[in-house]
Image 1 (spheres, rainbow, N blue to C red):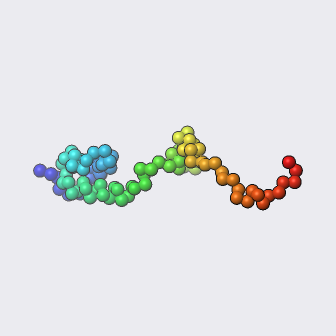
Image 2 (image 1 turned 180 degrees about the vertical axis):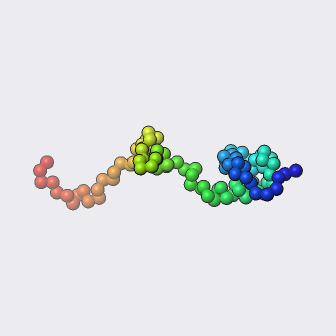
Image 3 (image 1 turned 30 degrees about the horizontal axis):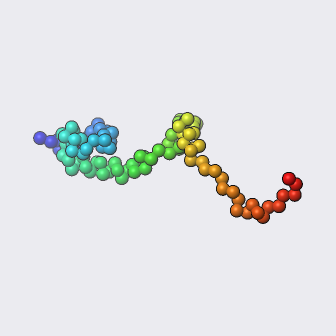
Length: 99
């Protein structure tokens, strides 16, 4: 007999930690909850967190109150993102007096 009513805090935490790697049916069976209840929570989690799957240099910063430190991973991501500067399109317009 499956449990009725809203999901508890611990159950929501379990679903949040496992919904990307485990099927919804397995989660519902492990929690002894209806499949519809788990599906509704998973759909809410997908709507809230669509961007968290992408890792950015900003998300790799170490933050505390009043300070921000760039970690080694964030630094390497920023270096990889940099591109070579394009040559100026107005380079021919500049006249050099001395070489």
